[in-house]
Image (tube, rainbow, N blue to C red; front, side):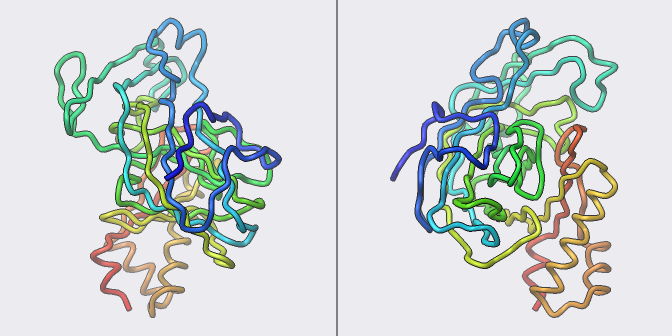
Length: 291
């Protein structure tokens, strides 16, 4: 199995970039990722040089062309080293109330992370940034769109699958910004940021065009919709889930819409930024009953 090291880090998804690696349909690989701060832990240094959010990539998928989609099976996410939360001016839901740079360190103990104060939190390693490359360059940190990006999805753990559209030849996949744990919205600006080793299997669906990221986790089927306006992003995520149910089951639009009102959930993925992704979730237990 091949390995792409974290030395192959990028800060921009560039459609003209030379790939760090080319893989084939169905290939498995290990991807190493930096934490969001590239190992820096000093609040003063973080204040003077804010994190840029590296991703590892870009990975070309042989034969991938616009109009196709990728299926990325996340076989394992292994936390490497410690984890840290950092907040500072302008970050999180309450940027005007928290003006100091503040770091909380977490050590990893088996299936938990433990803070400096001894608070124990269940560890749930997840991938925060995963994307194919769009037609126009985008940052790996903060930016997101129909190609995926910095979506901070806590459900994207070992045993999950994410589907992403191919927008440029080769798809040019990149991923990073892993979390040992993170809450919906990451209200303080970051999660428990960590380095990771991610075991992936990447498959190519020829001619399978999708409108944006979709995920299947152990519990949910999820549609993800980033946008500059939270309300319109929510509406779009609901519409994408309705469309999926109509296309993939025998439900009509009104049946699907009603089902989501009773059994679905819509949530904010990440703290407020110029582009904010939201997610629509439907339990797989419910989905499995639909024909």
